[in-house]
Length: 530
Ligand code: KIV
Ligand code: ZN
Image 1 (cartoon, helix red, strand yellow):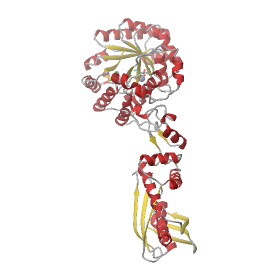
Image 2 (cartoon, protein in one colour):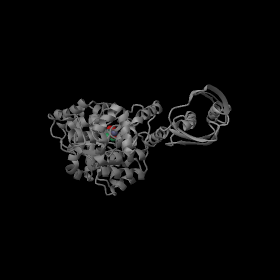
Image 3 (cartoon, rainbow, N blue to C red):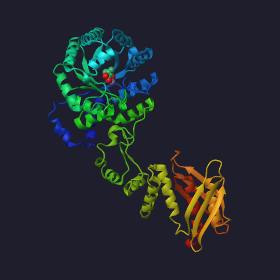
Image 4 (cartoon, rainbow, N blue to C red):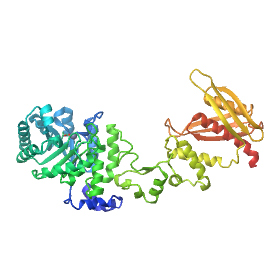
């Protein structure tokens, strides 16, 4: 599937990005990187992340999605860890996947037997080669470690398995000892060799050096497995590929032990955008990431590269203006390239361009002369960091359009104080100014803060004023949603007339009072507009 995509749509994909031209210049010293295989370990190392536990069905669903994305090798689990794990591996084996299914195994005969019992054709076997691990964890001498590694590779090969061998904690292992072990496992017939940065401690330049050194000894394909403890997993993976590794271990969404593994989506995008190597079907990255996020329950940070909810979200006026003219001004590539969508967020940094762009996208013809009003209403609502979604924007617009026919303000609310609490009678004090008749202050109680505030306004304006209808709705159903209040009042000016008022805002009491003041002013405007 992804191979078809390579020739046909790679050119279209290239039009979707604008990365640094220096990337290509820097590559001139590097030998041609033709093909990189994606070894996905979402279901093994990824599942080892604290808090993730996948059922059999979950694993199969993720495996099918990763296969559809186009990964080359799927490390489906660790056969020796239990019957359930073996069943999953057997199930994956029978799921007609294009990817090669692989199981992890320690350098232990019974682990290889467990792999063989599942029917999978590939094993990833590992033993630690650093002094720290050999001395404190394995309690084995370097000679014993080498002997075990060679014995297990021979055993697995003799039983027909494709074998990848890992020197666990390679980046803290003695280079000469590692070369010695790797010579041994090559002679035993290993198919590929993996270099794990088990606790994420190497730098990209050092990783390049290490791979370069190992290439002098290793004649089979070299693989890399990077953890993100110091935030360099993807950079180290790319550095290893740059230096000649041709297999890259990754996890979708960067999940994995502790701070995770190199993120599949970040490695794939970097290889494509900066090296011109297409490893997976790029357009399926977003949907696959969301599926893994949903099933694992491991929520992505908003600022997660490529797939975080802010990866293609723009709020500030300058950026939105640029993006609307040409999205590549403030995006390295178009979200469609990875199956994602752009979001123009309306918030406190929004400028007229963002709002106009959103209105256009929603098909709303909003009078240009009222745009400053809309902008200031939005800023007022969003000042505390609230983001305004489309439904909320529609209500704000509707409210402003509805109000625009009311000319002038006869009654202004100067002050409002509301006292409320548990086992307290809600009490409100208001001061209003009525044009031509001066200031009035009134205090009233109510069954709650809204009722108290409205009663106080009624008292200040006219005792005969009645509330005929009161409607409150939260627009998004979230606790920080904008609310919309509609009121219908009678007798503002003692003539039995009805007046409707509406308001939108974040605070229910304030918005109710605004709606009430809107109705009162509309009633006064009746005569003025007539
Ligand atoms: O991080 C690591 O070293 C591993 C090994 C099992 C290869 O995951
Ligand atoms: Zn690992």
